[in-house]
Image 1 (cartoon, rainbow over the protein chains, first blue to last red):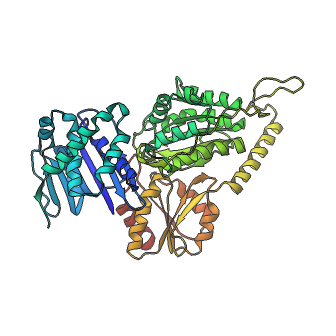
Image 2 (image 1 turned 120 degrees about the horizontal axis):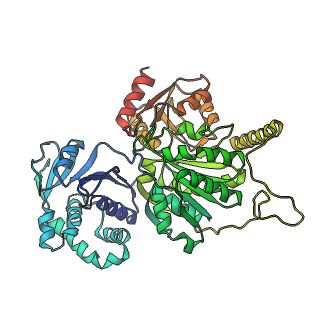
Length: 184
Length: 355
């Protein structure tokens, strides 16, 4: 199993930490992982992305140009990464603020309205955890037990009381993700 | 169970330096290397081990602080990225000339000039062939993983003190910024040895210890040069490190160092899936260069593709190593652009198989 993921969106949406949580969860599950951010003169509100690779064998290149899964959280990211999904791969997009729908017909496409759900949960900070939940529903590569362990590693100790809320958000994401286009 | 952590390359080598018993760090921030000093500051090293971490007023000040600490027999290091390393070159030459141990980390970014902040390998010549003035060599280690960033930090201090020579760790923006799982070694004690070459105060009945790279008599300077050259021959004999993949039956060879070796390895796997017998030789030490490994392999090879994130620097050493026994071509992206495995494979098919 090797899962090559690009996560992209606005700075401040928690794009980089989503990748870190997936990778740390992979470490907890005794898998090989690599996380590579786009770095540059970027700022809150600008675009941000990271590549996360989770595999049961040694990872060669940490830098990729095609992906098994693209998780895109805004329109510029959709424009940039829709074409980078491998044929037969998966595109997950967050529906808020998305102007045009994906065009590809040779990939699986799922949609998640994580932002509205985070408002219902009265905490927009769990937005990215809802998206992670949606991803893990479609690609169950990590066990919830290891994701919680990963969260504990990524979150500073003073935020550990928020872990149950994050777990709730992950489960909510699993419930609300919808398949828009399926190859099967 | 051993503790595994997910760390950035820059953070990992900073933590490794603390654990290797470093006495001092002097540096000045620059992207994509700033996490080194950030991590060291946040780690409260003075409470943990007593290690000094100081943000100098400039790169030039930082390297001269390293020079001073090294002269006192301390385990000192500095880090920067390409333009900052250029500023440090005078100090590096002095440290090499005065035969003092220290570690310098270069998290390379695209150049020349201020260039770009994205990853590059265009400082190979600067690291390996000199950089500063005079006939000197740095021992140059090139990590390709975050784990190697940890392991080489420890190794770098060992080699620096074994040979009383500056050691360069040549990382780049990819290795520095990426996160991978790492296993850290146990905290080592900070040592207080009494080196006879260190300026730790004149003892009664013993001559003064003088640290200098200045010799007014040319014959004396020649003696220094002979001593340095003898040391470099020892280094070349003992410290060559490299890694080989699928070289036993290889008819062709890829070679690359650092992060480009990771990407090239993917290209090698793709070529192997096509049934092409190609291997990969990755130098882990850029100086001393694994010349013999290339020379010995050359007889069985129809060609070598040298992949670098520069316009062709290591290729010169590869060509010198094989001495005309096989063809060596270069593929590179530069200025901060990272090559992808598809274009490496395509270049290999065009330049080596079809060429």
